[in-house]
Length: 438
Image 1 (cartoon, rainbow, N blue to C red):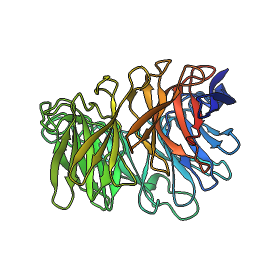
Image 2: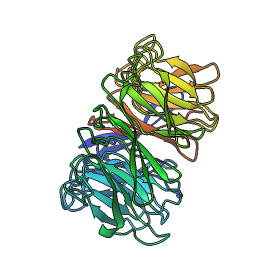
Image 3: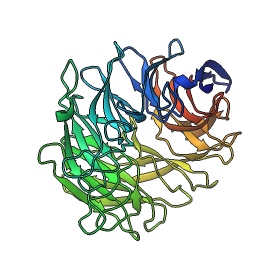
Image 4: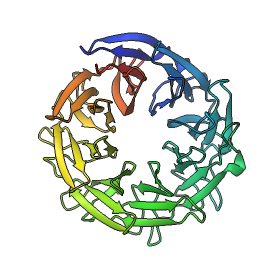
């Protein structure tokens, strides 16, 4: 049976089916796309494939060719891979599975593009000192040379609350290390006064020799943390902010932090003096944490996906709800002067509930997806021109050929946008789509 479709969309919103995916080709893609030097994109699906446990696939935008490169068996090699793959300096792809492996808690795997060879480098899982933890749900973050990869696990580790770990050193050629190649950098502790955060649902962001991340819960005050970890031994973890249920700066931070203007920026998703969460900054030189903007319902609330740094040095983000139509907003934040500007209200039934980060095109316009709205009420693709600004709905998704777009998009060499929808296609299980913004 079919479990999705690869299709293209022209500027008039016309869908052209290019390839009907069958069960063996995977279903429910919830993955970022990684582009290799060969111009092809690589990603993963959570389910489908020969064993029903997901696939690693290759997509050639030049020929609209989709190829399953590997089917996960859900047992020894892992299953239900998460958020995509990361290319290391040896040219190989590395990723995480959330299930399977020796401990049924996931694996860290390596894939060779040229030969299709797959190998498990680390079996995740375990509770107790020295164990790496398991059930990851975030992508690996490389260091500046892509010789070391950093990740998080949601559960397990010494305290059962998840970990931050590193993998490497990956050589310039040849395979990455096996069991001895990973290091647990931090075991999260919680709940209670000594809690460092619990059960991270995002990865980490690197700035120099420091990683920054958030947890949606835990911390001494119980409502999440913003933390840093040194990438050098002894890997000191510092809770930079512990949020409370009544915190004036909000609570429950979600979305990976972003580096801009020498500072680290993030968002809390709810609460604060204005009720809708806040944008915060952290100065690593002065260790100063500041709430720099409070989301309000007219300007948008519930910023869940984090912000992206634009080529103009400003931060761009989305709020899932609020605004004049209560369908969410798009915003710009200037780190210089801490100026917030609502760029657009999502247009009611046409656009609603943006949850994915924006993708900037070479000409400075932005494209994004929302998970609701559109003529079928299951999502749409849109363009944001910051001069004006002007928000233009481009494609309303539908159950066929696609619905519920998720995750950020990527640009192909020819300028097309490539993205995912988690439902739709011939069997309502997701598609890869392309769009030529013109």
